[in-house]
Amino acid sequence: MIKQNRSLSRGLQILRVFNRKPSPSLAEIAAAVELSKTTCRRFLITLEEEGYVAYDGVAKRYSLRPLVLELGYAALGSMSIPSLAAPYMQELADQTGGAVSLSVLEGDEIVYVGRSVAAAEKRKLVTMNLRVGMRVPAHCTSMGRVLIATEHADVRAFVSRMRIEKMTPRTLVNRADLTRAIQDVAKQGYAAVEDQLSLGYGAIAVPLTPASGRRYALAVSQSTTDYTQARLTREVLPALREVANKLDRIIARGLPGHD
Image 1: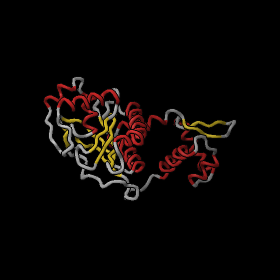
Image 2 (image 1 turned 120 degrees about the vertical axis):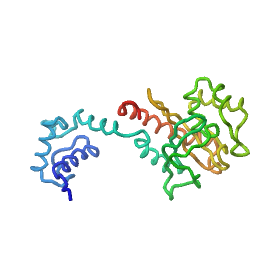
Image 3 (image 1 turned 90 degrees about the horizontal axis):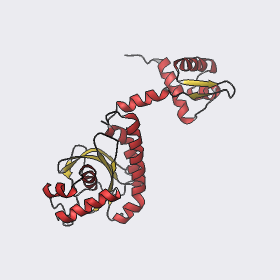
Image 4 (image 1 turned 120 degrees about the horizontal axis):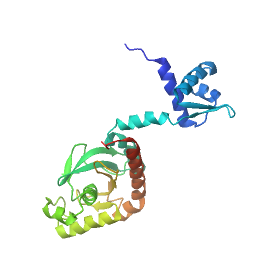
């Protein structure tokens, strides 16, 4: 059995204290990690020497130094965008009571690369049997329309050659109408659909817009019994955009090459 490195473990525990208290005193750090002040001080001296922690002798408090950001950026750089997005997607799913999906565009289809569903006690819909790796037609999904609008300057040309299926009696299959709908998405920055992929389901999606790299769409799905398109736009879109903006900032800072 490999033994745990207690020194490393305690050093990391000390760094995590700053998540809860940005400028703790020695006594506060020692209490948080359950060490004596003398032992804790030895760890802090090492962290100071390595450039991760600074000590204010007047205030008698500690603070993190910018060098610690390198650890965070290195961690982000090792993660894929779906992995990075997963905790934010789950939080959004629980907040809205729906399902949150992340997808990319491949030809006429979207491919699910992330999927989170609200916890059972918070769920407001019976979820569709969708999972990571599944492909569905792009034209009848909010994420597909967002990605077409984002990736194709000539929407009319793309729609004219794409395969279009009537998934429900309400699926928009007229190419001229579909072109106009996707052009509207390009102008407003989001797409909302209802009863397009499956009856009883609506969704609203926004793009993730990193400066370069592959494009992704993020969506929240809900039951049309509870959420009309107007309600999705009014109540869900602000939270969806907040998460997308947060992910855009994280991707821009921490993921060279964006995937």
